[in-house]
Amino acid sequence: MKDTCIIVLAAGNSSRMGSPKQLLVYQEKTFLERIIGTALEIFDPNKIVLVLGARHHEISSVIKNKNIQIVINENWESGMASSIHAGMKTMSDIFPEMKRCFISVCDQPYLTRDLFVEMLQLQETSSKEIVVAKYADTIGVPALFSKKYFKPLRELTGEQGAKKIIQQNMSDVECFEFEQGAVDIDTPSDYNHLKTKP
Image (cartoon, rainbow, N blue to C red; front, side, top):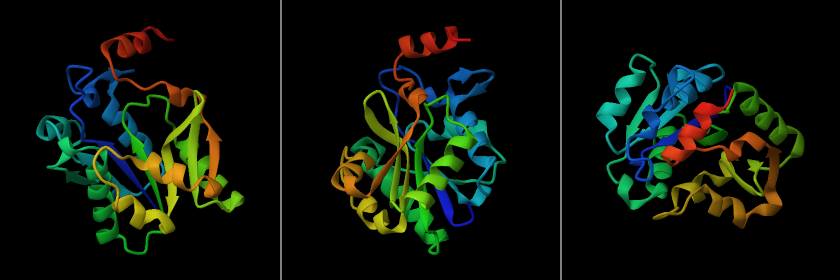
């Protein structure tokens, strides 16, 4: 992972949940602690960029002393593109030599280190410049982009997410099967259902 960075998008205000989902607890850890802990298993701390926005003081308090790069997106209300831009800018400023970048979120509780490793290996063996997770008849994050797509990612606007870049370049995309990626937590019902699972 020496040439690879990960950007974790966690700037939203969890409006459908009613409270910061970054701080929801699953298996004795908050969602934010889980994704950062997973990232720290395979990435150097200074190659992990966490983008926060709404209630960032409260949320950042759960991951003190991790030595990761934390970026505050003051424009988080304008949409996901602003968070991607903030993360990409920080990454590019710190690591201009970076060759690949994962974009991930904090509310997919089944993400593992092996998934990130296998996605990276798939990019190397497939010769595709983008590798995305596939689940529930759709594609999405986590997604791995080569440097070729850094500029388009930074040029996204408004509510546009990385999926726009993916859909515009499907001939350059390889999919990684991640059925449990369909489990993301947006509402109290989603969270309660997750907690009832073994």
